[in-house]
Amino acid sequence: MRKFETLLLLSPELSAENREGVISSLTAIVEREKGSMLTVDNWGMRDLAYPVRKLMRGFYVRLEYQAPPELVAELERNIRIIDGIFKFVTVRLADEVAGEVA
Image (cartoon, rainbow, N blue to C red; front, side):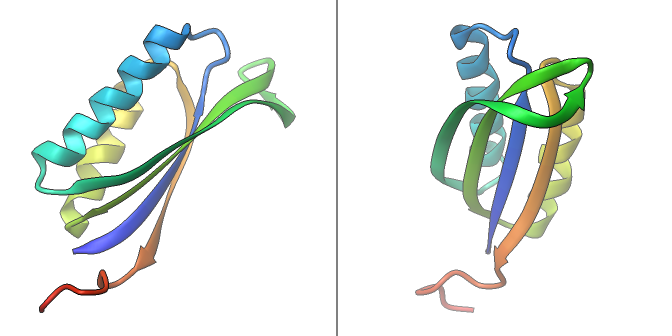
């Protein structure tokens, strides 16, 4: 299993309940696909450097998880479908998680 990080830019118009719903649905996808969520880091509302969908603010959330590589494609497919997510980026942090036997 590899370690990944996904940074999400959510709409500032989403309520706190809707944001939690989006995050919990993404966490459920990771768990369902045999991965494990390590960290959910809410960075909060931030000003943007340029307008995104005519808005100058956004809510950032960072997800750190370990999962098989196939999970990333499924997670990103779902991210594209979910309303309220403006942008996202996924980065591989480590090829192999420490302590894992190959």
